[in-house]
Image 1 (spheres, rainbow, N blue to C red):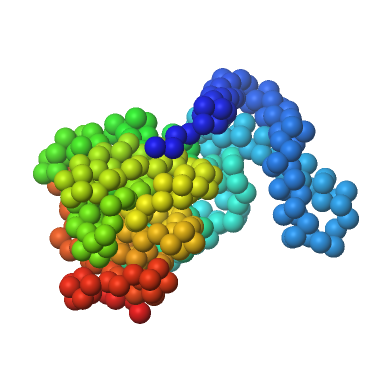
Image 2: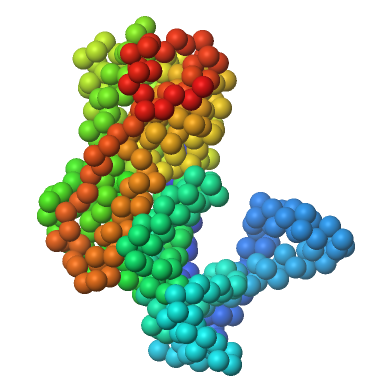
Length: 444
């Protein structure tokens, strides 16, 4: 399995601890001193962060081509300074909270308008800055009496946005209107699971009513941070085996939700592979090295495949940045098929995975039916949008006073098979009629 280079792990660990140390120091210093220190950090980041500096200047050149280069540099430099000040304000959140109304004030009759809109079931939009601004505003809204829900996921990928829309649909079906009954704050780690602890820490400062997560690492980060705030997981693999809950019928603790049951479906992937590609003897299994549940899923695939005379080898990537190197290693292995294990980071990278597999002429198997339309040869599993929609029922019950420990975990009852004939023709693969007849959808 391709692992994370030692040098990259070291840099990542040092970066995380530097951020934690900075937030800790910013929290204990007097506000003015912390604010000044944040400014110094922002200036230092501008001087030494060459990659981020060049990226900011490139974006400003696109946004403001009419401005002279010195003026764009001045804007970028001021932005770095603002981020430093914002980080200091975020670190001071606990100290600011008792006097929050003094720091975040609604102009005129703004608070009355907020309450009136919430009571009438109407939505409202706040436009604010980034670090240090939206956290204070969200906390202020919660203090105004509007319940908040936090999801540890948001994406540039339209398919992920569709998942969040499915959750909103489920909330409406349960009689809950966004803006009137709850606020939904969507956060996304962009495939970098090491960000989860900091994301959860920031979310807790908003005093959420419920925390929702998708991957096992995100749920673990939430559980480490709080034992009292209810946690709902969606489309999560093997929550019992991963140690998230005590049992499906009686989860215990403050966590429950909807499982994808992918741990019980992995043998089906090998059965499909044998039927669709009877000559296959080598399968590469793509996993997220930062998700321990993926390793367990691979072991089940490996053991079952071995009994069928198929060799299964794991190939891991812990972040999206590591995928190119992982692809090169897979290409050298020359497998007959590539199986993607259920994981949010890999789901988001589905287009890159499909492009690689088509280039190398490798048949692909995905663990969710939605990815059949992306170009995967075979896709089998439970509908992710449906699991997001069903998760809303848990949130409604929790908002009504139910305890997560008393809410049994829901498992999917319907699994769908999608066959992409376009991909089959591109690969020169003839899918047996028996597989096509069983498919819930054939893309042609």
